Length: 140
Image 1: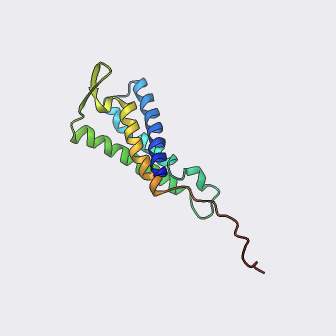
Image 2: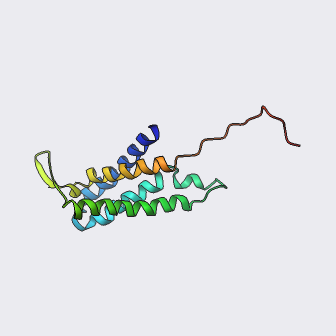
Image 3: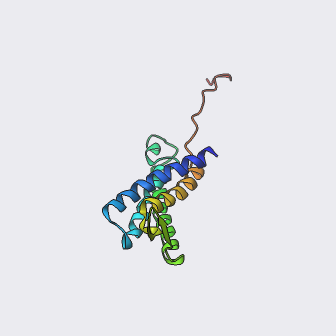
């Protein structure tokens, strides 16, 4: 349960931050394909085992983090496509105004990041540090 919550928080923070930047820059409409893809990419690079944790590990490679990021780009674009094209981009009314859901990129980006972040965090948790087990016989 803790890993799931951590993934939700990591993804929501990253997605909300990227979404806020896109909202502040006025990147709405056709920019959604790129914005939500970048949300998935960054969440894939950071959630679970971040890409830099593979650098000193001889049993893994940095490509694991890169592949999670590339898959995350596709997941972000896919979720955007489902909401924008299939669901018809529903109108959301809040704070005295009404906008399409994907135009509120700081909210929708946080949701996309939270969904993918939770999945990656459960799928690729950081490795547990091996404890020194000195109670047995020593090797010669």
